Length: 533
Image (cartoon, rainbow, N blue to C red):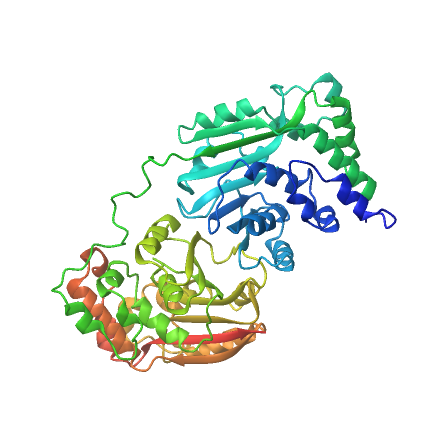
């Protein structure tokens, strides 16, 4: 706890430095309460002074800690920040982000720097303050990180550094306080050589921050005076003993070359070859009056990226029972090729996280850019449904089309998902289903070709889903029904795909025989919509 007798105005004066006037405007108690080492706001201000950040850019704050730097970036540069950290709970960061009033600009995520789940070339810049030394000292990491930065984008790092290479040996005058992790501290020249060895960046700047050692010591002494439990007497003693001879802060800023060949250049963005059909044939056959919004999308584009039943028809039906408003944050879970994510962004002006485990987010990002998102946005991520990296209560709604039944049949799953939705927000799914529960009934002969596949047993009735969701104790089910004549729409889609789509797909998942034989007796499409309690 801070010393109640300590004057925070005095603390504010103590931590003011010439090189960081913006940082001085942030409340002293907020900075003190959330500090995790050197003054992150000083460091991010001096780092970004050497970068080219512009309003609207997408910026990854890697190793963001308690998200102070993310708040600073959003406020000072009007950029959209992904606040990524492995150790700090994104739910705690989300509370800080909302309290700072930048919830529309900062997304907190739990992220391992060595297992990044983003789309290639998604970010305009990466910023890393007092963290890169923990995961970026090997020769492979910079090259890996650069995949996620667009050509012409920047990477900026500021980290404790040294005036000369120590080669793993602590100077005698620092030995009493030396910790093994300090071996990740290097000179700016060392970092320059490491990054340039990747062959993927042009290093614009590699230097020591002016007065870095003196400012670091001033900060440590101010924290100790204000709150001894938060400060580090050992670090302060080490900095005093060093007196600027060895320690400081290394700042490195590099740019991915504009001319570098981009991933996927010249390759098609679709999953399958485009269907071959006379102009207007697909639109005439697949334009249904109950789906006016879906009719605005090129059916050839949908067919070239299909993974099952018509995804836009299902999404239009599903969202017809929801309360989506412009600006909402939506998780499209199991988004597949992101067609549904594009639909949501364009039709409702929402901000969509397009999450899928099997389709590469880089491929989805290319599809999203090609299609456009209207007033909304789409952020593709690689996500395992049972290991969601999001903050509690972050989303206004979750939607899942032709995916939830693969991972959500266990009654224990829904609470895992519901924690990511704000109270009163909605969770909705649409998927293939049945009109009767087949657990207690023998499978009819005409469905035996499908029943041999384990996935068939994830097809459930709307009533089964209602019971399962209500038993979870975390939602109130608002809608649980089957699509009237859903089997006919399913059959129409499958027959059209069989006639015109890429045989590589239609020879497998698009087989229609069980649907033809069933004629709507058992097979259907189900929809469930619930509100988070």
